[in-house]
Image 1 (cartoon, rainbow, N blue to C red):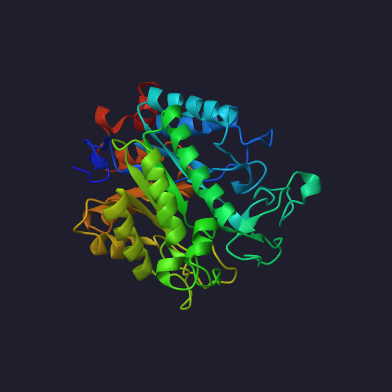
Image 2: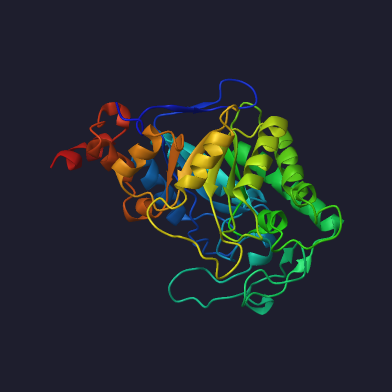
Length: 371
């Protein structure tokens, strides 16, 4: 038996949760392909996410999707804040379901890292000016997060309420679109992470200073999403478990807030990433470099019904299998390896001798794995 190709159930606040056909998930990865710069998914997204569903993954998580127009990372990023964006997501879900996969959506707000040029060949770097289709950005303070980015506007109480309601509205729209799982984006230096870390949050009100205050926005967002998102559907979160800076956000603080969110708001899945907040961090990038962080959270949350997924240069089926068999995580989120081979999961099933019909190799492609 392959652990990677054994089922896993993501629990929910009520009901039985969601049982997935295997433990190979697709990590959310920006495509910068909303051609109309209106947040609406296109044919590119249909084929992109459909290829993962056809490729044997059990859960396809759609890229960071802005809960407000100004919450997008770039003008070409997806949103879910009006009827056209919601309808486009429904097409993606229908595609994934038709190919036997569950569909998840990552919702977030880019904060001071918003309104940037797409991270694609041929584009400039930095903030897109308003005159070129960009927008004013918002953050915990009025200081730029990264060198080369425009200074954001410090959020006041009214602005914070708009963000919280944006997340709640996005959750309602994601449910109507048919998504099976929702993931709150609290990682990679975007708005929630900007509030969490003392490196970027120097506020002196109830949203800054102490760890309790710096986690307040995340707790209020999660509470609002929990109320809007059906209790029978799993609710997850993506975290940067560390800033890789002694003065920044830590894995211990991550474990504490995830426990709070699980106990108080029904979070049942945490996807463990890291970094993304400040330039120049000394990150020990290498194969599986974030897996030790997933292990720390797996151990810290062992008494809770919370699934932990590991992500970060996990590319080899044997590597993924070992992470699971040794109890370092409960599932694997595959990123760049899936971009290189959308059928990574089907190929992994063959490599791990788990290539049965339950591995969900599409019948049209079955012969390709035995040539």
